[in-house]
Length: 183
Image (cartoon, rainbow, N blue to C red; front, side, top):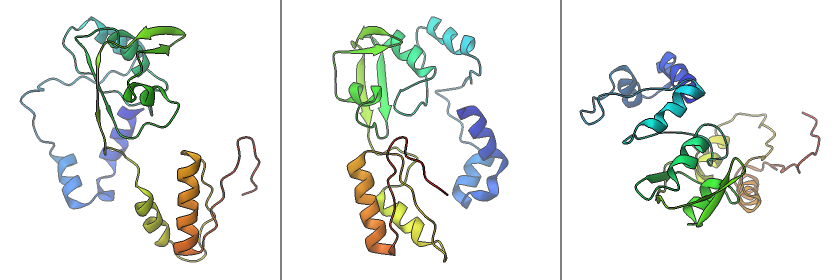
């Protein structure tokens, strides 16, 4: 999915500011990483496991699915491996448990000891923070959109709903799991 998303970004350079568009047109060379391989199939991704010194960049939310779980299952028991978790990890997710330093996790039904070094880099996220979201919503012209908050931790969503109400008079709803909403 990330490969396809990158291709879409590359086809729509007009959507970026000048600095980002220039990076897409002419990406900087990295002499320490002369060969980057995108793996599009499960078999190709699993073959990375045979490489002793590899850096695997994998995106899957909070490590909740996809091929990243295969790489984690292979790397987590190895004290010579490092796992770097970036961005926000929601409560109850595998990513959050790793960041919290649990001694073992369950992946694909197997209990795996966490011996790898787990590092975190906070602040890297594709999501705007509350202030950014409130500002973005404020740019909409009348009629203002109806907002349904369906992603995030309940207390954070409630705070965002309150900020939207306070700043823009928008009553953002937080539907419950299974609730039907007429759009």
